[in-house]
Length: 300
Image (cartoon, rainbow, N blue to C red; front, side, top):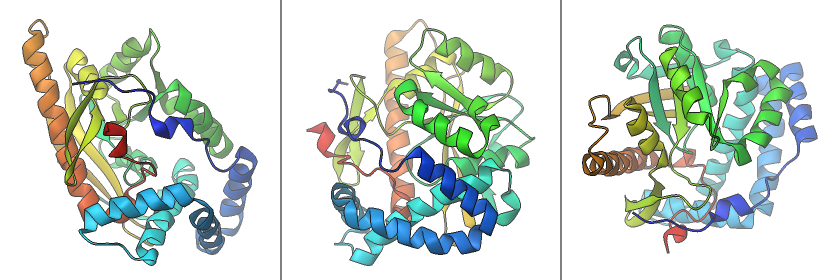
Protein backbone atom coordinates (compact mmCIF):
# COMPACT_ATOMS: atom_id res chain seq x y z
CA UNK A 1 0.00 0.00 0.00
CA UNK A 2 1.10 3.56 -0.58
CA UNK A 3 -0.15 7.12 -0.53
CA UNK A 4 -0.28 9.75 -3.22
CA UNK A 5 -0.64 13.50 -3.47
CA UNK A 6 -3.96 15.25 -3.85
CA UNK A 7 -5.83 13.59 -6.70
CA UNK A 8 -5.91 15.41 -10.04
CA UNK A 9 -9.71 15.23 -10.32
CA UNK A 10 -10.13 17.34 -7.16
CA UNK A 11 -8.18 20.22 -8.71
CA UNK A 12 -10.57 20.76 -11.60
CA UNK A 13 -13.50 23.14 -11.06
CA UNK A 14 -16.99 21.75 -11.54
CA UNK A 15 -18.51 22.65 -14.88
CA UNK A 16 -21.96 24.19 -14.80
CA UNK A 17 -23.60 26.37 -12.17
CA UNK A 18 -26.30 26.15 -9.54
CA UNK A 19 -28.67 28.59 -11.31
CA UNK A 20 -28.51 26.39 -14.43
CA UNK A 21 -29.24 23.31 -12.29
CA UNK A 22 -32.25 25.03 -10.72
CA UNK A 23 -33.55 26.11 -14.13
CA UNK A 24 -33.14 22.62 -15.62
CA UNK A 25 -34.81 21.04 -12.59
CA UNK A 26 -37.78 23.40 -12.92
CA UNK A 27 -38.00 22.95 -16.69
CA UNK A 28 -37.73 19.15 -16.47
CA UNK A 29 -40.69 18.99 -14.10
CA UNK A 30 -42.66 21.63 -16.01
CA UNK A 31 -42.46 20.10 -19.49
CA UNK A 32 -41.86 16.45 -18.57
CA UNK A 33 -39.06 13.97 -19.09
CA UNK A 34 -39.62 13.28 -22.79
CA UNK A 35 -39.62 16.92 -23.92
CA UNK A 36 -36.72 17.96 -21.68
CA UNK A 37 -34.56 15.11 -23.02
CA UNK A 38 -34.61 16.87 -26.40
CA UNK A 39 -32.93 19.89 -24.80
CA UNK A 40 -30.61 17.52 -22.92
CA UNK A 41 -29.03 16.35 -26.17
CA UNK A 42 -27.91 19.88 -27.01
CA UNK A 43 -26.57 20.44 -23.49
CA UNK A 44 -24.59 17.19 -23.61
CA UNK A 45 -23.27 18.09 -27.07
CA UNK A 46 -21.97 21.41 -25.69
CA UNK A 47 -20.06 19.73 -22.87
CA UNK A 48 -18.81 17.05 -25.27
CA UNK A 49 -17.41 19.62 -27.73
CA UNK A 50 -15.90 21.91 -25.08
CA UNK A 51 -14.66 19.23 -22.68
CA UNK A 52 -11.40 18.23 -24.33
CA UNK A 53 -9.66 16.51 -21.35
CA UNK A 54 -12.84 14.68 -20.29
CA UNK A 55 -13.45 13.56 -23.87
CA UNK A 56 -9.89 12.32 -24.21
CA UNK A 57 -9.90 10.42 -20.91
CA UNK A 58 -13.27 8.86 -21.75
CA UNK A 59 -11.93 7.67 -25.10
CA UNK A 60 -8.87 6.18 -23.36
CA UNK A 61 -11.12 4.28 -20.97
CA UNK A 62 -13.36 3.02 -23.80
CA UNK A 63 -10.34 1.75 -25.70
CA UNK A 64 -9.34 -0.35 -22.69
CA UNK A 65 -12.88 -1.57 -22.00
CA UNK A 66 -13.75 -2.36 -25.63
CA UNK A 67 -10.33 -3.62 -26.69
CA UNK A 68 -10.34 -1.30 -29.71
CA UNK A 69 -10.37 2.38 -30.57
CA UNK A 70 -13.87 3.79 -29.88
CA UNK A 71 -15.79 5.78 -32.45
CA UNK A 72 -16.70 9.41 -31.84
CA UNK A 73 -20.34 8.40 -31.41
CA UNK A 74 -19.41 5.82 -28.77
CA UNK A 75 -17.55 8.48 -26.80
CA UNK A 76 -20.49 10.87 -27.17
CA UNK A 77 -22.77 8.03 -26.04
CA UNK A 78 -20.86 7.86 -22.76
CA UNK A 79 -21.39 11.60 -22.26
CA UNK A 80 -25.08 11.24 -23.08
CA UNK A 81 -25.51 8.38 -20.60
CA UNK A 82 -23.95 10.60 -17.95
CA UNK A 83 -26.23 13.49 -18.87
CA UNK A 84 -29.24 11.19 -18.78
CA UNK A 85 -28.49 9.97 -15.26
CA UNK A 86 -28.02 13.56 -14.06
CA UNK A 87 -31.29 14.56 -15.72
CA UNK A 88 -33.16 11.58 -14.27
CA UNK A 89 -31.88 12.52 -10.82
CA UNK A 90 -34.52 15.26 -10.79
CA UNK A 91 -37.30 12.68 -11.04
CA UNK A 92 -35.74 10.18 -8.63
CA UNK A 93 -35.30 12.86 -5.97
CA UNK A 94 -38.95 13.80 -6.39
CA UNK A 95 -40.01 10.19 -5.96
CA UNK A 96 -41.17 9.74 -9.57
CA UNK A 97 -40.00 6.14 -9.83
CA UNK A 98 -43.16 5.38 -11.82
CA UNK A 99 -41.54 6.99 -14.87
CA UNK A 100 -38.87 4.28 -15.05
CA UNK A 101 -38.50 0.59 -15.72
CA UNK A 102 -36.18 -0.51 -12.89
CA UNK A 103 -34.93 -4.08 -12.54
CA UNK A 104 -33.29 -5.14 -9.27
CA UNK A 105 -30.88 -8.09 -9.19
CA UNK A 106 -29.50 -9.37 -5.90
CA UNK A 107 -32.16 -7.86 -3.65
CA UNK A 108 -32.34 -11.15 -1.75
CA UNK A 109 -28.90 -10.44 -0.24
CA UNK A 110 -30.40 -8.09 2.33
CA UNK A 111 -31.69 -9.03 5.74
CA UNK A 112 -33.06 -6.64 8.34
CA UNK A 113 -29.65 -5.31 9.39
CA UNK A 114 -27.81 -2.29 8.03
CA UNK A 115 -25.20 -2.88 5.36
CA UNK A 116 -22.47 -0.97 3.56
CA UNK A 117 -22.92 -0.61 -0.18
CA UNK A 118 -19.69 -0.09 -2.13
CA UNK A 119 -20.06 1.41 -5.59
CA UNK A 120 -18.11 3.59 -7.96
CA UNK A 121 -18.55 6.35 -10.49
CA UNK A 122 -20.40 4.02 -12.82
CA UNK A 123 -24.10 4.38 -13.47
CA UNK A 124 -26.47 6.27 -11.18
CA UNK A 125 -26.51 6.36 -7.41
CA UNK A 126 -29.86 8.14 -7.26
CA UNK A 127 -31.63 5.17 -8.84
CA UNK A 128 -30.36 3.12 -5.91
CA UNK A 129 -32.66 5.11 -3.65
CA UNK A 130 -35.52 3.27 -5.33
CA UNK A 131 -34.15 -0.05 -4.07
CA UNK A 132 -35.15 0.95 -0.56
CA UNK A 133 -38.77 0.79 -1.70
CA UNK A 134 -38.39 -2.82 -2.84
CA UNK A 135 -36.12 -4.03 -0.02
CA UNK A 136 -38.25 -3.57 3.05
CA UNK A 137 -38.61 0.21 2.60
CA UNK A 138 -35.03 0.72 3.75
CA UNK A 139 -33.43 4.13 4.01
CA UNK A 140 -30.51 4.66 1.63
CA UNK A 141 -27.81 7.08 2.84
CA UNK A 142 -24.84 8.35 0.81
CA UNK A 143 -21.45 9.15 2.33
CA UNK A 144 -19.31 11.97 0.93
CA UNK A 145 -16.20 13.88 1.83
CA UNK A 146 -17.00 17.42 2.90
CA UNK A 147 -15.14 18.94 -0.06
CA UNK A 148 -17.48 17.12 -2.47
CA UNK A 149 -20.65 17.37 -0.41
CA UNK A 150 -20.98 21.16 -0.56
CA UNK A 151 -21.96 21.32 -4.23
CA UNK A 152 -23.95 18.09 -4.03
CA UNK A 153 -26.00 19.42 -1.15
CA UNK A 154 -26.73 22.62 -3.06
CA UNK A 155 -27.85 20.61 -6.07
CA UNK A 156 -30.02 18.29 -3.97
CA UNK A 157 -31.55 21.24 -2.13
CA UNK A 158 -32.43 22.84 -5.47
CA UNK A 159 -34.44 19.74 -6.41
CA UNK A 160 -35.67 18.35 -3.08
CA UNK A 161 -34.46 19.91 0.22
CA UNK A 162 -35.41 16.79 2.18
CA UNK A 163 -32.86 14.74 0.23
CA UNK A 164 -29.96 16.57 1.90
CA UNK A 165 -30.65 14.67 5.13
CA UNK A 166 -29.51 11.49 3.37
CA UNK A 167 -25.89 12.69 3.05
CA UNK A 168 -23.40 11.65 5.71
CA UNK A 169 -20.11 13.58 5.78
CA UNK A 170 -16.82 11.71 6.16
CA UNK A 171 -13.55 13.06 7.50
CA UNK A 172 -14.93 14.57 10.71
CA UNK A 173 -14.34 13.34 14.30
CA UNK A 174 -17.98 12.25 14.68
CA UNK A 175 -18.26 10.62 11.23
CA UNK A 176 -17.70 7.04 12.41
CA UNK A 177 -20.23 7.42 15.21
CA UNK A 178 -22.84 8.80 12.82
CA UNK A 179 -22.11 6.05 10.32
CA UNK A 180 -22.43 3.35 12.97
CA UNK A 181 -25.71 4.87 14.17
CA UNK A 182 -27.23 4.80 10.69
CA UNK A 183 -26.22 1.17 10.26
CA UNK A 184 -27.71 0.27 13.64
CA UNK A 185 -30.96 1.87 12.46
CA UNK A 186 -30.96 -0.61 9.56
CA UNK A 187 -30.05 1.88 6.84
CA UNK A 188 -28.17 0.97 3.68
CA UNK A 189 -25.12 3.23 3.58
CA UNK A 190 -23.50 3.81 0.19
CA UNK A 191 -19.87 4.67 -0.49
CA UNK A 192 -18.07 5.35 -3.78
CA UNK A 193 -14.77 3.51 -3.46
CA UNK A 194 -12.96 4.18 -6.73
CA UNK A 195 -11.48 7.61 -5.92
CA UNK A 196 -9.56 9.24 -3.12
CA UNK A 197 -9.47 13.03 -2.61
CA UNK A 198 -5.88 13.23 -1.42
CA UNK A 199 -3.17 11.72 0.77
CA UNK A 200 -4.87 8.46 1.62
CA UNK A 201 -3.55 4.87 1.53
CA UNK A 202 -4.19 3.18 -1.81
CA UNK A 203 -3.73 -0.31 -3.17
CA UNK A 204 -2.61 -0.66 -6.78
CA UNK A 205 -4.38 -3.57 -8.42
CA UNK A 206 -4.95 -4.65 -12.04
CA UNK A 207 -7.85 -2.86 -13.69
CA UNK A 208 -8.58 -3.19 -17.42
CA UNK A 209 -5.05 -4.27 -18.21
CA UNK A 210 -3.06 -1.85 -16.07
CA UNK A 211 -2.58 -1.26 -12.36
CA UNK A 212 -4.79 1.49 -10.97
CA UNK A 213 -4.87 3.01 -7.46
CA UNK A 214 -7.88 2.19 -5.31
CA UNK A 215 -8.34 3.77 -1.87
CA UNK A 216 -8.35 1.39 1.09
CA UNK A 217 -10.24 3.82 3.34
CA UNK A 218 -13.78 2.57 2.57
CA UNK A 219 -12.86 -1.05 3.29
CA UNK A 220 -11.00 -0.01 6.43
CA UNK A 221 -14.18 1.70 7.62
CA UNK A 222 -16.15 -1.49 6.94
CA UNK A 223 -13.53 -3.54 8.82
CA UNK A 224 -13.55 -1.14 11.79
CA UNK A 225 -17.35 -1.37 11.97
CA UNK A 226 -17.22 -5.15 11.34
CA UNK A 227 -19.93 -4.94 8.72
CA UNK A 228 -20.96 -6.83 5.62
CA UNK A 229 -20.12 -5.12 2.32
CA UNK A 230 -22.21 -5.42 -0.82
CA UNK A 231 -21.16 -4.19 -4.24
CA UNK A 232 -23.70 -1.89 -5.86
CA UNK A 233 -24.22 -0.48 -9.34
CA UNK A 234 -27.21 1.36 -10.83
CA UNK A 235 -26.63 0.81 -14.55
CA UNK A 236 -28.43 3.02 -17.08
CA UNK A 237 -29.69 0.86 -19.95
CA UNK A 238 -31.03 3.60 -22.22
CA UNK A 239 -34.47 5.15 -22.53
CA UNK A 240 -36.15 4.89 -19.15
CA UNK A 241 -34.52 1.57 -18.18
CA UNK A 242 -32.19 1.00 -15.22
CA UNK A 243 -30.71 -2.16 -13.74
CA UNK A 244 -29.73 -2.18 -10.07
CA UNK A 245 -27.12 -4.82 -9.35
CA UNK A 246 -26.11 -6.05 -5.87
CA UNK A 247 -23.35 -8.60 -5.34
CA UNK A 248 -21.67 -9.94 -2.17
CA UNK A 249 -18.22 -8.41 -1.75
CA UNK A 250 -16.85 -8.88 1.79
CA UNK A 251 -17.96 -9.77 5.29
CA UNK A 252 -16.01 -8.27 8.18
CA UNK A 253 -18.57 -9.23 10.85
CA UNK A 254 -16.36 -12.02 12.27
CA UNK A 255 -13.06 -10.20 11.82
CA UNK A 256 -10.58 -10.31 14.69
CA UNK A 257 -10.28 -6.57 15.42
CA UNK A 258 -7.11 -7.10 17.51
CA UNK A 259 -5.14 -8.95 14.82
CA UNK A 260 -3.85 -6.12 12.62
CA UNK A 261 -2.19 -8.44 10.12
CA UNK A 262 -5.44 -10.35 9.57
CA UNK A 263 -7.37 -7.10 9.22
CA UNK A 264 -4.94 -5.66 6.67
CA UNK A 265 -5.03 -8.89 4.68
CA UNK A 266 -8.84 -8.89 4.67
CA UNK A 267 -8.89 -5.27 3.51
CA UNK A 268 -6.46 -5.99 0.66
CA UNK A 269 -8.53 -8.96 -0.50
CA UNK A 270 -11.73 -6.90 -0.35
CA UNK A 271 -10.24 -4.01 -2.36
CA UNK A 272 -8.98 -6.45 -5.00
CA UNK A 273 -12.43 -8.07 -5.27
CA UNK A 274 -14.01 -4.62 -5.49
CA UNK A 275 -11.75 -3.65 -8.40
CA UNK A 276 -12.60 -6.93 -10.13
CA UNK A 277 -16.36 -6.33 -9.73
CA UNK A 278 -15.98 -2.77 -10.98
CA UNK A 279 -14.05 -4.00 -14.02
CA UNK A 280 -16.78 -6.52 -14.83
CA UNK A 281 -19.47 -3.83 -14.75
CA UNK A 282 -17.26 -1.42 -16.74
CA UNK A 283 -16.80 -3.98 -19.51
CA UNK A 284 -20.48 -4.85 -19.44
CA UNK A 285 -21.68 -1.23 -19.59
CA UNK A 286 -18.75 0.94 -20.76
CA UNK A 287 -21.06 3.87 -21.53
CA UNK A 288 -21.78 4.10 -17.78
CA UNK A 289 -18.18 4.94 -16.78
CA UNK A 290 -18.29 8.45 -15.31
CA UNK A 291 -14.68 8.99 -14.20
CA UNK A 292 -13.73 11.82 -16.55
CA UNK A 293 -10.09 11.98 -15.47
CA UNK A 294 -6.88 10.04 -16.01
CA UNK A 295 -7.82 7.05 -13.89
CA UNK A 296 -4.56 5.14 -14.45
CA UNK A 297 -2.15 8.06 -14.78
CA UNK A 298 -2.59 8.95 -11.12
CA UNK A 299 -0.76 5.74 -10.23
CA UNK A 300 2.41 6.88 -11.98
